[in-house]
Amino acid sequence: TAELGDATADAFAARLANLTALDGLRAVDAAHEANPALVEAAAPYAVILSTISKTDAPTAALGALVGHAMARVKRSAVTVDDALYDALAPALLRARKNAECLGAVGAMRDASPEAIRCGVVAAGRLNDAGRVKDFVDLALKSSALDGLDDAALKVALRTVSKAGDHRTAYAIVDGLPEARRNAPMYHGAIAACGRARPIKGKTAMLLWRRMKAENITVPRSTYNALLHAARGSLTENATTALLAEMNAQNVALNVVSYNIALNSLASGGRFGEVLDLLETMESSSIAPTAVTFGTAVNGAAKANNSAAAVALVKAQQKLGLPLGDPAFASALEACLRDPDSKSASRNAGEILDVLADAEVDLKRRERIESLARAAVGRDRASIDTARLERDEKILGMVLRARTAEV
Image 1 (cartoon, rainbow, N blue to C red):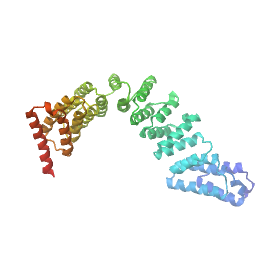
Image 2 (cartoon, rainbow, N blue to C red):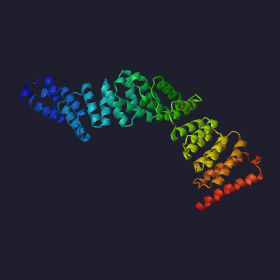
Image 3 (cartoon, helix red, strand yellow):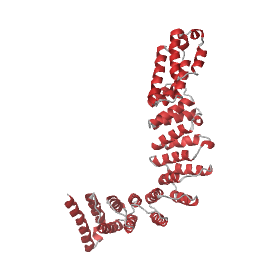
Image 4 (cartoon, rainbow, N blue to C red):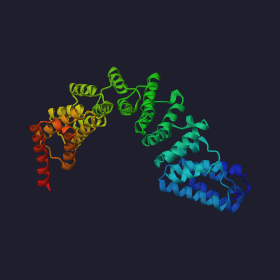
């Protein structure tokens, strides 16, 4: 106590740096009794909060320490300035008081790089992509982006990527010096392009070209993200280019790669390449799955290509893969959307033949029946009587099965 009476405020704050957070609080209490002037400035509390931010303890204990420190700030009527907020934010982040941390950073007039880092991580933990974007924008304006550590950048990219915020993801990668850019960062930005609405395939392809220019190895997971984003590319052969590059770089395609590529090609109406890719898949000893075909048939429906839908359904049947509601519904929808009504009606009849032979247990029989009748009926006048009778028998089988089930 005698020492406190003779101490200066700066000397007292410096001595607190050598104490634990708990002992620092005790010293503040002692100073409050012996020499209140020592604790009427922000410096001692900033030191204690800084110590808390580096303390290994359960989060509940850390939160309690922060609370005790701020209670003493209030007791001494200390004005909370940017310097104190700058120490408070990391302590709150350490205690996983994420909302409170955002509040502390938001209260600052001029956020420091460390405060921006805390804001990014806290907002990321809360899955608040909007706040992450705000902090990234602030970091870019204040030239503080390169000051963020890899962990904070990872959190930022993951959060904005999940939200499909391709602009912020691109800004993060673009705003860093080349030496700091790496494959995971590019992957996050490319994934964001694939999740954006509409998909930003052109931006994803630009990021891929930058990866290659910077001699960054592109892993298969990133190629898969690129294949997904390529559906939104303005370049017609983006998917083909990516598949060719994977082959050139000896990056083996897996089932996920094939499924994404098939979806992309099918959505673009490029069904010759779809069938070629299915053959490649089989020759690579990777067995197509029902999901693989379902993806392609769904793409045929979106492209209004009934011929492709029939070819895919027959190929799935030939491989002995189970056919169900989604496959038949998508194929029949392709027949309804195909602008060539005569071919579409004929193709719908072929789908009904597959339906009759497949002996599938349809769960949505009313939907399949409705689609089939509408698709076949698009050119009923041109269909011979025997074909019509067969169609009705097949649909009757569907109806009887539905009635028996009910």
